[in-house]
Every structure is written in structure tokens, then in C-alpha cells.
Amino acid sequence: MKKIYYIIALMCALPLSMAAMCGEPIPVREMSRAKLEISNALSLKANKYAPDEIAAADKALYASHDFIKNEELDNAKTSAITAFEKARDAYEKSLPLLAKDTMDIAEKSLDDATEAYASELAKDDYAQAQDALKKAAAQYEEKKFLESYRNALEADMLAKNARNAALGKQGILRDAVDEVVITIAEAKRYNAAEYCPDKLNAAEENNKTAEDALASLELKKGFAAVDAAKVNADEAYLIALKKSSEAGIADAGSLIEKAEKSEGAAAAKDELDGSKEALAAAKAQYDDAKYRESMSSSSEAKRLAAAVIAVKKADAVVKPGAKGEKETAVIEGTSKKAGEKIETATDYTIYKVVYNPSRRDCLWRIAGKFYDNPRLWKKIFNANRDIIRNPHIIQPGMKLKVPVLKKEPVMKKDEAAVKPKEPEYPEKESDDADLTLPADDAVKDMDDFPVDAAGDVPAE
Image (tube, rainbow, N blue to C red; front, side):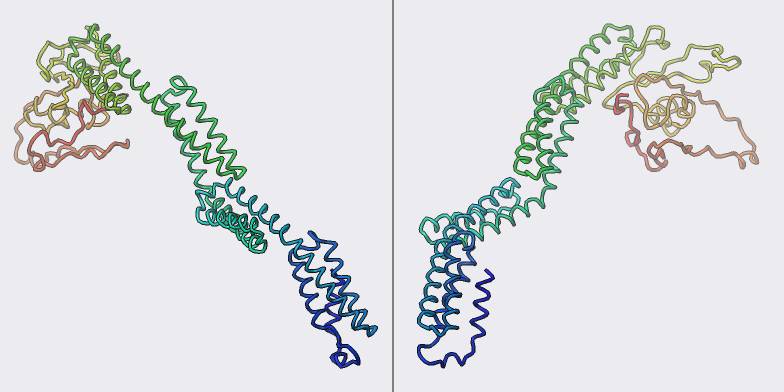
């Protein structure tokens, strides 16, 4: 290689005066052609594919210069022609070999792009790389080696670009893997390990494969694995959800049967009816494939049935009456705490909250029943702060003390002027919703009272 550069430099340094030497002229044209052909052969890596031929061309061109120094111009011309021919041989031998190797390199780059899922994540560059490689292969078969080599170079560049673009989107695979993790967790929450262990295990194994493929940048493998994981995780979730819904309905049915045979069946008929209604709703929702809603209804049915079972004969301190009827307290005496007096029936009346889906119980309506004035609900709330945390929420079965209204003493004019106002609804330290109730002129009917009643309270 150094020798050819030396020869080229020597040719450029030949004084123009030599062109005027006696005898035959210097073979400048032949030597220039030989030099150009040697450069072309070297650009095709002739020193790798045709080392003997390029070495012979180099040697002949160097000899041509030696002949010029010795003024053997005929021999110089012959040697320059030989250098050209050897360089041409090196070029023609190297070109097909280079084209073939370049196609192999492009094919490897395309395989790498395929592993990076470039067929989906970098579609344009990937498709162009495929087309260029196909053209290169066809041209090679037609012995159009130069065109084949150029298209193979183009295919390699496009394939590398496609792979890099695909790798830049590996976050898509990361998100897909994370979504499957969430679905698997939900499936486990509904006992998928018990109801469909095979699908749950398949989901976890495939998602682990996807994780590993992501780490090794094998995105195609990763996307294939995460797709399989997603299918299995979704199926496991749905199966577990359906089975859990079935189990909830079965448990609620069994508990209602027990409640029907319990001591509280007669004393808590409203709650028992409510549990049956909730169970019917759970079955209807199950038939509509609304499994989560079905489980919620089953939970409500179980809660109400459990409330019925908890009622004992000893707890029935009221006379039988219609739904929502007033109940008179019969307990008197002193509490377990020494000196603490229990209010007698003359101080308050006991009212048991009932379950009525169409017209739900609330403090507003209870005040209306007892006082003929629903806006006196605060009196009931203040008397039951030990069991009511939020006046918006009262539950079926609660026994509320309803204070008996006492006649206000007649006050003198000056006393009336300083009568303290009824305290506003007290602030609470809890995170409950705003408990402010409607102003006097804001409510025209008891149905406008914005309070959740017994039927809407979630199971504890």
C-alpha cells in the first residue's frame, strides 16, 4: 500500500521537461489509468479479496517508474499496461465477493432489527431495508455486482436505523409488562390461585420472560411473551371474578337461610327482606356478567342477614308494629357505672332504624314522624352522638333515642331578648363530608333531604 502511494507521488513529481525527451514519450496516460484502476480495486477491499492481483498491479506500476528513470520508455509503457490489467483483475475478483459479504452483513442487521421488533415499532425503515436487500440479492444473481453491493449497503444502513428506532420505543414493552403485573395482582385478589392456578402461573411465567427479553433488548421476543401473559392474566382475572361472584351469592344464600331460622327473623323482618332483595340483585347482575356489582350486592345481602341473626329475643324491647312505628323504651334504672342515671321512657322514645329501599330512613324523616317538624333532626342527632358519627349515615337496626319535646316555659320579654340561639351544627375532627343541611326555605319536601340513608351504607 505504501508503495502505490509512493509511485503516485513520484508520477506527480515528474518534471514536464521529460515529456520532451528524445525518443518515445513518457507513457503518462497508461500510468494514470493503472493508478486509477488500482485505487478502484482498493476501494473494493482488493487487498482482502484479491491480494495477489493487487500486489502484482502495484509491482508493475512501480517498475514502470524505474524504467522511466533508466529512459526505457517502451518498457515503462508495457509495465504500466500490465499494472492496469492486474488492477482490473483485482477489481473484478473483489466486487462479487464484497457484494456477497455486504449482503450477509445487511441480512444480519435486518435480523437484529427483527429481534428489536422493528417490523412494528419502525415499520418504514424496516420495510425499506427488506426491499433493498431483496434488490441486492436479485442483482447479484444477474451478476450486477456493483448495483448489488450498493443496495446491500443501503439495506444495512436502513436495518440499523430501524433497530435503533425500535429500541427507542422499548418503554412500550415496559408499560405492557407493568399492566400485566396489575392484572395478575387483581386476579390474585379474587383467589385466582385457587380458581385457575394454571392460567395464573402461565401469566406470571410469560411476563417474566418478557421482563428478561426487555433487559436483553430482544423486543420481539418480549412483545410475544407479554402478549401471551396478557391473555392468560385477563382470563385468570375473569375466571376468578366470576367464581368469586358465584361464591358470594352462595354464601349470601346460606346466611339468609340461617337468618330466616334465627330468633331475629320476626323482630328484624325489614332487614331480612332487604337481604333477600340484595341477593336477587346479585343474581341478576351475575347473569348480566356484572360480577363486581354482583359481589357488592352479595356483601350487602350478607351484612343485612348477619344483622338479623344478631338480633336476640332479649333485644326485642318494643311492641310489634308497622314499618317505621315508634317504639317505647322499657329500660329503667342505673347503668353499670356508679351514679350514672339511665333516661327513662318519660325522657325519650326508642326508634329502630328500618330498611326501606323506596323511602329510606334518615334523621330528617324520623324528626318529621316524631315532631311533625323534620328540621328538628339535630335534637335526635345530639341525643345519639355515642352511636352516630355522621348524621348523613344511619344503618338499619340502630336504636335511636328520640328525646321527648318539653314545653318551653313562658319567658318574660327581657328574658326572651337574651335567649341563646340553638347552636349550629358542630364541627367534627373527622374527614366526613360537609354536614351542613338545607336552609329552611331550600327544602319543600322531605324527599329533598340530601342525606344517605340506611340502604346506601356499604358493608363494614
